[in-house]
Length: 443
Image 1 (cartoon, helix red, strand yellow):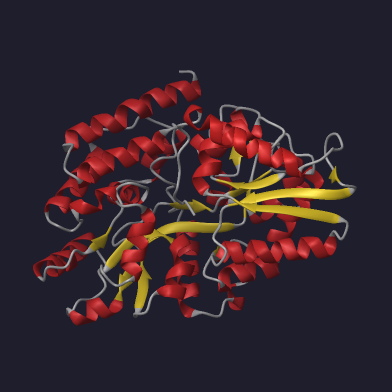
Image 2 (cartoon, helix red, strand yellow):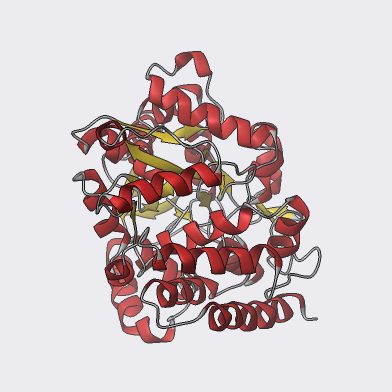
């Protein structure tokens, strides 16, 4: 969901929380068999499964169905499912998975600073043999596979399989078609067109963009602006360390400068600096803003809750978009039910689950497009497939190094509340990135 919702800092500050979580999990667990296979609790086989998808989201609906199928096919196994808060898993994963209190399988965020970090720490199982045996490597290919494999240093794109994604995501623009019609505006196809549309809204006293400065949305808007001046070689340099990144010019400078200008022009409200993503989303769903730049993980909720005519379009003029495979199913090294975990992953890759994802507003990676019935659902899936075909997925701005999420969020928040100049933001982005790359690579 991203897409989205990333942080690898603050582990020491949350030690007490982890201890409490671990104690609770230990209480519901039991004795276990060594190595792979199923754990035993009160004489029954157990699969402990965690994820953080909302119950009514496309993935939440699909995972519930997958659990149902798993139970039918494994009648002697008890599934101990827990829905966790994203930040709870994100901030505490290393400590939880380094104990005996963690799950046997969990959903986890992808990227160097998240799944890559855990893989480099030896906390995730190398599932390369299973990926080959079960054919996951034939379904998850190209840019989708980039986030599934990691080097021994935790850098995505090459190495061993440490996770399996089974849906996709990307950042798009949601727009209130009723508001566009009210003001006589049409969907923009270029960045200049988008600027004119936003000028028209501000002239009528309407703030064009819903925004959250306290969490990820501000970082995604910045990255969209940077990507408007970027190409694949820049993305590879930034994300995969295949070159030097200029933080004082090029895409970074354009993204920072343009974001700053948009705040000054009133396209983004300064008051949004303290808002969270939930605040942003609910405000847009309530019809308070014409446009929302965010991920496809919002799609199902918007479809269910928005009471006005709406649709989506790709960020105008861009050939690259923030996006990737969806989050990963990973199997902790300490899992006591690895074979069962692999069986569950296999179920989520089946056509019936993939079709359910698509018809619930998600983006399946192994579904027959003809089985998707809703026109808007088809559109977001077709746009994603187009990005895949053109190698247009550019991942996310906070991925390159551990702890970078908080850096990028703080930097964009400083632009929104105008407490930082563009030059100060560029410096704030450069220092931790450079230090992080050196730490990861040992260079």
